[in-house]
Length: 283
Ligand SMILES: [Zn+2]
Image (cartoon, rainbow, N blue to C red; front, side, top):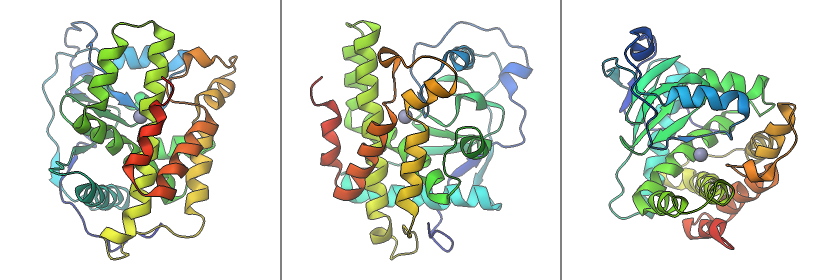
């Protein structure tokens, strides 16, 4: 992925190095927040507990980091890619308003409760913010077998921005509403449709990245393959197998490896978000 020299957005909030207030402060846990944060990975039983715990409201104060363009490479990368994703969506959606982006490590307060690094990257619709713990990149390639290419990371970022798009279009709210009157298994199928659509939106971003940046941010040879390798590694079926469990389709929340690859590719080949409406077909 070409990205150095790309325009920066300058609006990344860097909370790295701040202690994770809420938990460290031992503030009273007041119960699980009913609001959904959109995590990047399907949930296996061992992480479910940490996510449920992660969504508990801590009593700690809200954290504020440094706003701007981070000076380190990893932070700069997020700022450049985020700016580029914003620029792409501004050409696709009338009145597009960009999400906030927060870098953190360990844990941090969010509009969806307390966020923990164990959750992986996530988007919180309440405060319209993408939360990234950059140690996830490492985990993604070493533990999950995903690609360590820059595009694999950019795909994750663009996927989370995809959930922001769904919050703007109302798709997320529609799904949440529909899920209230259905059982867990059916509800999960709607979650899968939403997640695959976010993958597809990541592909739409990639297809248009160069166009909106005069080629300063651009796909290079091998990038699509790196993205597909990553999508393959993070499919629900693959993660379930990896965690030593049986593959249980009714527990899928993000889609199979084949589905995630297919929709990333669909978005990339079309470059058009309307191609991503198909993830809801048949529901
Ligand atoms: Zn997601």
